[in-house]
Length: 243
Image (tube, rainbow, N blue to C red; front, side):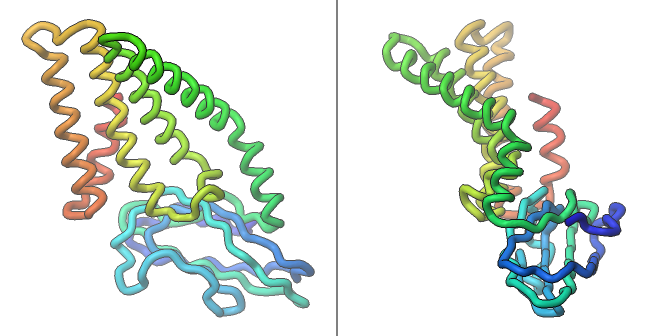
């Protein structure tokens, strides 16, 4: 099932309604789709069956691209499916087509789609374990430990970029916090590894850069997660470019 009339980048700060008619469902199925959302509702024949966030505070959330899996009851006749989406900072819409199928179908399709990412995650994790073991067995193995922590942070961050994570734990806010936290950890530990191998550098520039990223990671993560300031889309591009 492919959603007709894909939204074409409705501007941020706008409430988007999308409605479509789907055929009867002889057996209980699940609905799968990706959104850019801060506040999100799904209606089936004008009855709300799913929501993310609080309608009275639609701009309190910043989840980014999120996979949703929703149970659909069987139906003897065609039904109407309606989406209501709001985002303060991003263009509003559905990121992918909408699919209907069994839970096993969805898991198989997502697994096949992301097999390369999952292989990379497993490979990085194995190397991280080997580096941790080496650091504990070898005196002064802080370089191994730093690179192991860098790979661990990269592994968790890569997992937060997958769709299959929602099958592990269905909590968008939890994954969003992990996304931000471990993204900020990546340059910290790669710089620590660089210092262990090449030293502090002239005028301790490597060490000062490491200190800057540590302070930056703590402050940025705190401000974004607890939403004291709307800095997410100012800080993340800077962080990504610094990688």
